[in-house]
Image (cartoon, rainbow, N blue to C red; front, side, top):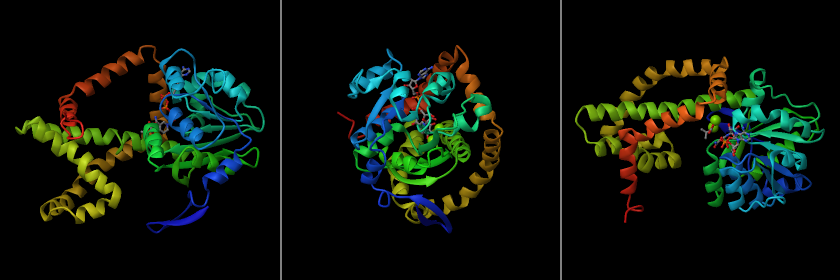
Length: 349
Ligand SMILES: NC(=O)c1ccc[n+]([C@@H]2O[C@H](COP(=O)([O-])OP(=O)(O)OC[C@H]3O[C@@H](n4cnc5c(N)ncnc54)[C@H](O)[C@@H]3O)[C@@H](O)[C@H]2O)c1
Ligand SMILES: CC(C)(O)[C@@H](O)C(=O)O
Ligand SMILES: [Mg+2]
Ligand SMILES: [Mg+2]
C-alpha cells in the first residue's frame, strides 16, 4: 500500500498502478465470484468484473425484473445465472449485494454455503456492524471483506465504460484464510475502483449513512427546496428559480468543482459572487452543523439503522414509499426540472 498525504494527514491507499488488473486476475484466477443480487450495485460490479476477465456468476431470485435484466445483460440461466442458493453454493467468493433489508431476510439461506475458505463480501458495513439487529454473523472459517464504491452502481458501470473509475473504501472484518487482503484489494480493482482507501465496517457504515442523509442527498435536497421556495415566494419564475438552484449547479459549477475544487471555483467567479460566497458560507455552515451532529449521533446510536430495518419490514412500506417518492417527483421544482432537461440542446429536437 502507498502512503499518500491528504492535506497533511498520511493515509495508506491502494492505487491501480501499484495493484494492476493483471495482478488482480492472478490473485483471483481460481475463484468463482458469485454476485448475489442484481439491483443497482449487482449489475455494475458483476459486469465490470466480467469485462475485466474474472470468473463471475450471478445469483438472483427468478421471475422478477432483476432476473430479466440479468438475462438481457448476457448472463445465461444455468451457466452464469442461478437462483440465489445455487450461486452461493458455486461461488468461492460470495458478493452479498441484495438490498440491506433483503440481506437480513435471506441470510439463513446463504449461511449454509459459507464453508471454510470462502469469502463473504459486502459493499456496505450495515449487516455486520449492526448484527445485533440483523443477525448477520459469519462463520469462523470465512474471510469477511468489504469494497464500498463511493457512488451509485450506475456510475460505477458508466465510468468503467469511459475508462474511468469510482473510488472505493475497503475493509477486512475477518481474515480466516490469510488471503483476505489480496482478495479484497483484487476485488476492489476488479469491480472498477479508482483508488482504494482503508476503513473498517463500522466507519464505512457510519460515514455512508451520514453522507447519503447529508450532503449527497438529504441535505442537498433540503437546501434546494429552501432556496427554490424563497425565490418562488418572491415572484421569480420556475425557470429562474430552477436554473439558479439546480441546473447551474449540476451543468456548470459542479463539473468545474469536480475538475478543480471549490477553492478554484471561489477564485474563478465574479468578484461579486466571490465576496458574497465568502461572507455567507460560514452562516450556512453554522446553521447546518448542529443538524449534522444530530445526524451522526442518530447513526452512531443505531437509530438510523433501526428505522431502515423497521420501515423495510412493514408489509405496506412499498406503497407508502411510492407515495412519498411521487410527492417529490410531482413537486413543482422537479417538474420544472424535467422541462429544463428537455430543453438542453443535446436533448432538444
Ligand atoms: N445502490 C447503490 O448504488 C449502492 C452504492 C454503494 C453501496 N450499496 C450497497 O450495496 C448493496 C446492494 O444495494 P443495491 O442498492 O444494489 O440493492 P437493491 O435495492 O438494488 O437490491 C438488490 C437486489 O435485491 C433483490 N431482493 C430484494 N428483496 C429480496 C428478497 N426478499 N429476496 C431476494 N432478493 C431480494 C432484488 O431483486 C434486487 O435485485 C447494499 O448493501 C447497499 O447498501 C449500494
Ligand atoms: C449511492 C449511495 C447514496 O452512495 C449509496 O450509499 C446508497 O446507499 O445507495
Ligand atoms: Mg448507502
Ligand atoms: Mg454511499
